[in-house]
Image (cartoon, rainbow, N blue to C red; front, side, top):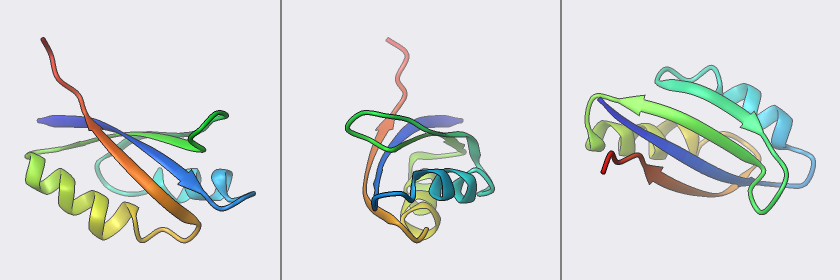
Length: 77
């Protein structure tokens, strides 16, 4: 299982709606609207890195109101 944090920037005033919509996507563990340089932080999981990438590109980035994403895979050192 691969997990990652997805840091999301949204259009002004869209963070709450984006977080709620993304929270319903299969594989998303948690989606929270936050303050700071990013508007929403998501924790997601998938079977493989490739499947995680497909989820981000095909589902997360398609949510209306998102302007930019940054995916940070979790590593255990």
